[in-house]
Length: 307
Ligand SMILES: [Zn+2]
Image (cartoon, rainbow, N blue to C red; front, side, top):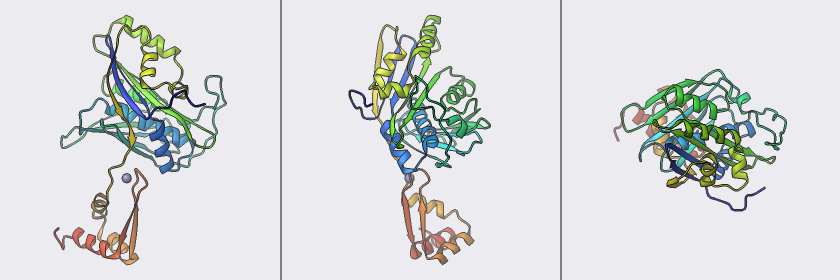
């Protein structure tokens, strides 16, 4: 069922009393990523949740900073990786997008049947987060995967690696024809001075709200999700709204840089083949290289020519 109004993907930051909340609708960008990588449902849900989580994490950053989330629980999906920037762009991929696992049985709150994300992610590995803040090296943190459902893993990461008590909710609803019906998420952080009564109100709200993908399917936008999460709070201040999209920053130049790191033998093999096609891992874009271009790259790579 479509909501009564369709919204473009967006992220809203808000505060109320002593609580900070970010919420995002990511249906279109998840659909875009899923299509680019030809994801089956388990991979679609895992990639959508991770990309949404990365956008929520990025919302805390300053302009020009970036965050990468990598989930690897040792399951059949391999790694799930997403990069996001606070300007609202995200890109991501799953190592094995064609993993196929049966859905768990439908329930009243989840009539489509629950996709077995934890089964694909696995529970034996790490969430790794890199924050690129303009310093030479990224700030890196990691935490054990606790459930493989991704939202709980990110909540646990924030609590254990960054000592920030939070609650992360993520959801992707995948239709029978592999279309993305709804996707989105939220991140709630009580501020350090938060009162016990605020924490209790939040905990009660978290227990009673619908899953985030259901709220979006029912037509709620990010502000609507925030109002559900903050039911009972006096004043909700909407701080900002950011449009969101899947966008990769790959270019032929960046691919050339990668090719030049190959060994002399590998570069010679490419030259002998007479042409090469390189596919961007993040967005699926294909880059073609002619024999002349490969020869030039080999010469630069071997230090014979300085550009
Ligand atoms: Zn790309």
